Image 1: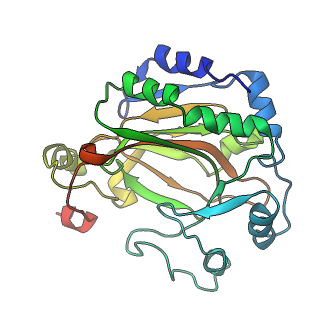
Image 2 (image 1 turned 90 degrees about the vertical axis):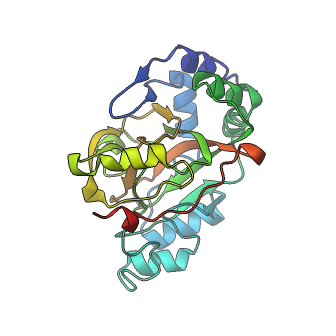
Length: 282
């Protein structure tokens, strides 16, 4: 079994970045050997495809991925392809008044290479779980959920700080080609424009209401998580504004990440009212 415990020490030793909000950023997260072996796995380093249709079909039937229920995404391959190929542009898009597109998050469900199974097992372990809670000084009952996912073009989540039920979130880029760092497939870390910063106070003081997605033009990008073999991690708060909008040729490569969350459970799960960005319009 692969030993990934050295990653816990990297989290313990990491200093927090403060702009545009508090988060951890570590480059060269996996050892060179681990990273090369992970990104060489056939389920990660899939071949180029001739079409979006072939990509979706083979990710599911050859490489053991499955469309995942995920914000900004659909689990219907046909619905996605119809939209992506402009046959039903705008139809079926979640929050049509806010999003310009949607995509599919393909989650790897069966690991043909043992290193991938060991990796996911480690990131769902008590040791990793407790490491994160200790780093961010979090209490309460939580559960950890980590998976390997590929995200196709069109996937979009408008600027948001994450719902209050989420205790922590982390993303590790395991893209298979260096050119991925320059493509339009990365998470934006953002801050509100001056005339919208009052919303931070609204989210900070109204703990009885959930946060929500907001229009892109309300915020500005301060940083993009683009470097391969790097991790970002943060504990959602009133100001952890981030977003993603993928626009790239997914037949050549796909945005691929180890993606995970800590979720509050039981009595620790906050009971809040739903919110909508239209209530923030002034």
